[in-house]
Image (cartoon, rainbow, N blue to C red; front, side):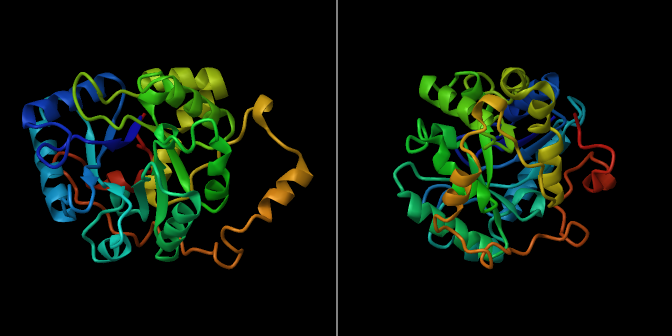
Length: 300
């Protein structure tokens, strides 16, 4: 499995405070069947601002430290809070996308109006960045109103749910919203959003089993294997499908919904990153260089 969202580098945010904890988190992940971790410290202007070089250096050191402990690939990214200077920081290489793929983990503020979120997302996309919304099931404005995500998803935004939400670890409202987003076909990947060994560990298997009961084992596994692998390559992940009981309104209603303004057709033509030319993340020690063609080893 591939975990796209892990706070595992010490001293950069509210994740682990020392290398011992980081190494133990890697061991926990390996025992759970995770073979690739993307180290994604918070980037929140004015609070946490690790730059790309610092993140890459810490990821490389972590890979060296776990070489005799477990076999896990360490890649880099960031969990980015929306800020006024974000497009410029991405363009200047300060904030890394996931494995330099053009996909960006984007954390939405709880209270921002939906039109403002749409504007921010559009601004990123016209700069060639594909947002991956992190844990919207924990955002109160989507709880019980999960269909609010539909215009964003239709425009090309991806959705990542937290594994603990699916299993109830963030409370009933987040669990209900996560289950509903899965059944509505509004979920592209699951990730741990791990911060620690005990309270928020890097585990995915329980959430995959729970999601499998909702959308089927094959579709659930796609959220932690095939889709994350495609994202790390800069490719288009498989589109999620609603379950039979949540297929929603018919053709006329769907056509009417599409008339709601968000992005016009010409605005939706965002240049996709070319996986053949996209630069790769810093290669953390102990991992073969061919790992980023991901031809046979997306990691299960």
